[in-house]
Image (cartoon, rainbow, N blue to C red):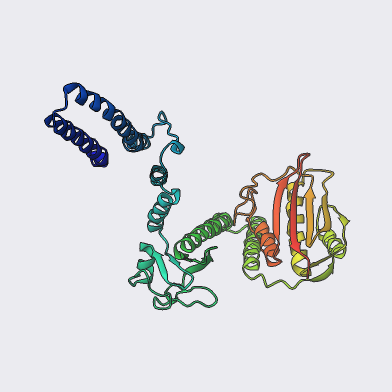
Amino acid sequence: MQSLYLPLYLVICFSSLTVLLGLSLLALLGWSNLAVATLLFIVCWPLAALWYWLYLKIKLPLQQSVIYCQSLNEDAACFQLNPQQLPHAYQQLLQEIKQLAQPPPHRDQSLLLTLVAQQLPFPLLVFDQAETLLFANNAASHALKLPLILGSKATALGFTAQPALNHPSLIQDWQQQTIQQKNGELVFYALDLRHPLYQQQKQSQRQLIRVLSHELRNSLTPMASMTETLLSQVQLPEQQSRLVLNRIKARSQRLLTFIDQYAQLQQLPASKPEWCDLKEILDELQLTCSIPLQHTGATNCYADPYQLRQLLLNLARNAAQACQNLPDAILQVAAYCQGQQQILQVSDNGPGFANLENLFTPFYTTKANGSGIGLMLCQEIVMQHAGSIEARNLQNGGAELVIRWPLPD
């Protein structure tokens, strides 16, 4: 910083040397001391003015700039500087220093995003508008099994661009996705579906084995026990034998019903919607249901008539089981349209659902003799119609299922 004061120092030294040489020359020429002193006094005034002017123009702005830079470096707000009081060159210098002291916030954010992207467990690549590779994380190199050099073209890396970026190495068991940013950059990523699919399959197998084991044990254990008791006797009494055979028949029929329900769930055909008479379907169900049905609203709906009949039959059976101890039990069915949606509300006045969270969990049931398949079948039928089904308990008691599915175009 001392080198910045060099022009000031040179001017002071040169002017002082000039004055001393001039006075010495005058003394040699015979000037009196009074005359020399008078001349020195006269000359010092403009020199002092010159030195002060140079101090204001050079040294003072430099000192203020140094103090200002130190305050920026230390994040101190005690020193306030008015740049308008400085020369134009210093104003430009301080403006550049101030900009350097405030780095763009996106610089740190970009670095943080890059570090996070490198740690992602799935492949992530970024291409520019010309499909030139700008970024690739470590998971991408591992999944594609090839070196990913920045600046390479997507086609050179094995990607196809129609209709979106895809790589043949990630077709099986992968879900590929491409997102185009506003600046034209393409962000490609792929998700490995093998692990979640395996976990889901394993969980479904556990549930299936648990339910089948429960059903088989509940049916076969009493049958085996009754048969063993009957065979342990020397002579088979006819009355006891008939009683045992009737119980074995009942247990066998219950087991066959469970198997038929599960087979029906697995073999549900694709829905074939058509305009059907909802009131006619409910009148047919009333003949086989032990709970009164009350219908309000629209009489026609667009759905597969056979699957709709099965859906309402399962809901009516569930409502009848829930309201079996109520003398005034009733199942209300309301149908109406809202925009492009058909809505079917099925409600009863029973005790409500015991566990709403697991209502549609496969094979989950709170009933002593339930299988957890009936509502699964209802949900599958609704999904076949591209709809949704929601369950809730009513404030005044009872349960309600709301089914929505779209109208035809």
